[in-house]
Image (cartoon, rainbow over all chains, first blue to last red; front, side, top):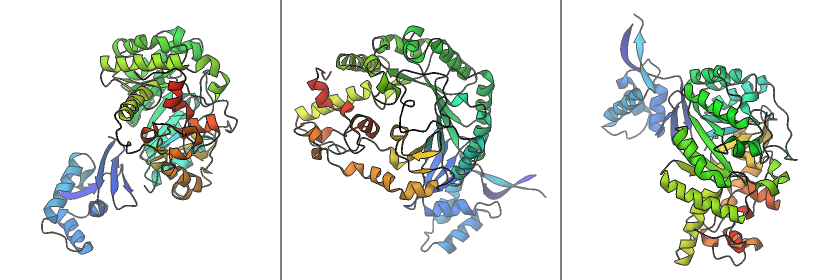
Length: 95
Length: 360
């Protein structure tokens, strides 16, 4: 098994979407929680192990208007923070 | 908030003890009936789908349920964490090992009301002190977080120094919290023998304020003499110096619970809080919790309670502390006055002073 560069959301993590456009990711195993905005929620939902960061950034640019030039770096940093805290892993390649 | 973030669930109406100040028993408006395992598991599935994060399991005594491991598995399966409110007496190695194995337990709160069996057992029954300590040590052995709640009453109010030393120094707990017996449930029946009088309240406040200096950050409270002592000191300073109203002062802002959590009784009735157990908002597995949370008229009315000015109440007429007062707990307001939308007389600083109390 080889680790890919395709992030996949930890299935134990709960996404709580609230009325006022913010959301909470909650890791029930560690009790860690992260607040995020609608873009973060969209990124979270795209981390299905089938897309790499570039693919996720591309989807976000298609879904949101006026995404800034730095959005790719910001999304990569966001995914990195989630990975460091056990919210996200990298898909394993079975080949 | 689309759904509650946490719930307090009374998973049983049974208890092996009959504490003389228990808020839970002897409430004529509550049905004391337990739900079968399947009903709770179905409800936990709903909570999982709503993104609820934490359940506090209370009772009765939650460890009395024989199916507790099955219930905990249902909670874990639905990606939630849990905590317990317990008397500690039924905790053994088997259940402690199971809880530790889930990795999802926030803590177990055990009630300890004395530094010795004499003070503790006076209200909780003979032998309960030793069993509670055994429960605490079992939890510690399994590295499960233990918190202790000390409920202050007539029989332990003069034991607080010893209690602090026993819990923090001898048992090595990081901290503990305090409250006092309140006029609810069984306590109403035994009020004369349990509730603190003004002199005892004054003594409890003085001792606790002193102990918080001796043990910085290790003694807490969200109600009772320590909270009153701190709050009333601030209120008296503000009044004496003519300071502007506190940001939450002058209105019924004493309870923020309905904005992020909700409770379920042992019989499955959804209620705003265990302290407002009469106020049925719906029933689990019959009513959608999200629907109740978002649209219950009673719950939404409770959420607007903070708009009610204390100046509207005859009870508060002429009080110079109004700009700094929050009206405190609606649960105690209800049991003492019959009205939820009323300041709690128990937390009235003016009344306390008129009856001989003093701000320390």
